[in-house]
Image (spheres, rainbow, N blue to C red):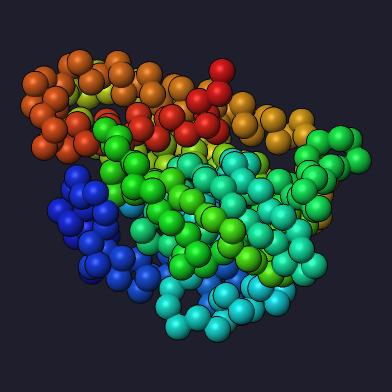
Length: 335
């Protein structure tokens, strides 16, 4: 099944069909960044971004879900080796991580295990996940443990879906099939080997040397570009070329910037070049400015598209709702 054939299947669905999920698994998109030795595609940063952009251009929910879930599978680089082998090599079904970046729960340390409880929000792809990732404050003997600077000690955990209660509360105007529900965990006992931290890497591939904030910025940014490209492509059937030229320019600039940064990151990580906080902020600022420009470009032409584009069944309306739902992600919505 080609990517284009997915459009009618996904259109306004609240969840992906089994056909779509089968297609994702067949193409191994959940493991876009996972090393081949762990049954993944082991894409380079540029290769992976190109695939995510094409998926986002096909359908916002498709691109967004695969981006966030393959981005969670990226944590294989941070997992302790025993956990990585058990999850990715001993499973007979596709491995799909997803969860929340918020710190909304606690993990009580008891010997080699943790007892985890809490409620987390915005787990993209919740119904499709094999494992949930979460962040929790660490406790011992009833007290919170602290870092040297006095801040709470926080670990990340990966837990099987069977230990999680999904709270179906995703009710938005767009990105419906991402099914970004909340989830709850109550007194779940997890071995310490399934705890990890973002800045500690156990795998040698260059992709895992990328600071996670840069990885997140680039993989999300490419989704906005892909959706905006889809919007512009559909708008060309309605508007004259002269009205769309500024949009083309903004998209061209966005693509140039994003892939320039991606190629630099590949060079830096291959050569073990120090990636400074200044460079990290440069990428984030560039991505934020670019997304705002793309958003404004869409808003500038949407009133010119007529009542047809305001129909909920029209593809332009769907892309509009998907795109602006995506803009509420905290990465680029911060003041």
